[in-house]
Image 1 (cartoon, rainbow, N blue to C red):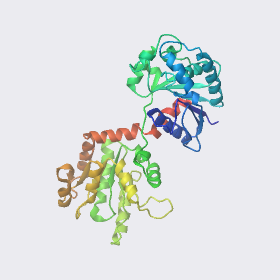
Image 2: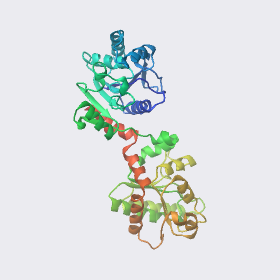
Image 3: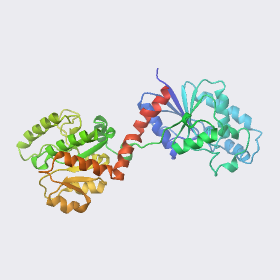
Length: 412
């Protein structure tokens, strides 16, 4: 049976904000993973046809009734209307959460933006059998900005004590230490799930680019070498295959090679060269890691990537690998430079003139593939931008965070 997940916050997309953005990614990712998702907030709107949105202004931080109560609470006074508002909110929460199995609550257990809502949720949990995950990105009691508004006793103490039967999540190791000290609980009882990034949306990839990257699982690789060239002998692609095999053997990691172009159209022998390359790929055992985009197809015809797709590959590649033995100039060197990619290329005059001292050169004819591979691995390892790029791709993508950390939490 499909689990029904509620996500509760003061505001939700399309409202702009850090937590609101986090909510959108969580909702989209959980929907894609097969969960029924309902957004519950005081301000927001529909942003996905399959995600239910329930808006009640009382759940927000700017409703007049909420602001009136807060103005008294901030001075340490308990408003006469507090309990009545809590009961109204309890009933509203009961209706909003109807049918939901799990509720992910953002900041309502840790901030004083709507303390009647916090109190109503605590009261609802006394009778309502719903599993609560408190996702605390911010803590009022440890923030000097909020401390003048906080006072000993109820309801302010709801924000600095652990609630029974609630699973706590926060967004960083530093915040976990802060929460554990505030709640006087074991830090390991608090799970850290960081925010992430969606490369497809960030880079505005075309749908075809997204499908290609997803199908080949390029974002899951340890390293991606890009060779933007047509398949002709002067491009020396056979050396690239040998170097890829050596890189994988030396590192023990999933490195990939992308060759973007089709066989060159002006020499009939290029088709036979492609056959040689495919045979070599099999002999080297890199069939699953050396990708010729010419082979990739959505309709059975040979594929030719457009400029947008090639640009997308530059955005996720870890290095340009360009082993050509003959070039008139070498545009890929410029493209890689503009993309901020480390460049490993053949030591031939046109490429040296363009790359000067800013690229790593190798002898494309006489140097052993093992030597070139070692230079590639070392070059990537000493480059802090390259290391960060690979770490973000592996550990901070929304799809990976949701599948590897959030889904197991929901199924625990």
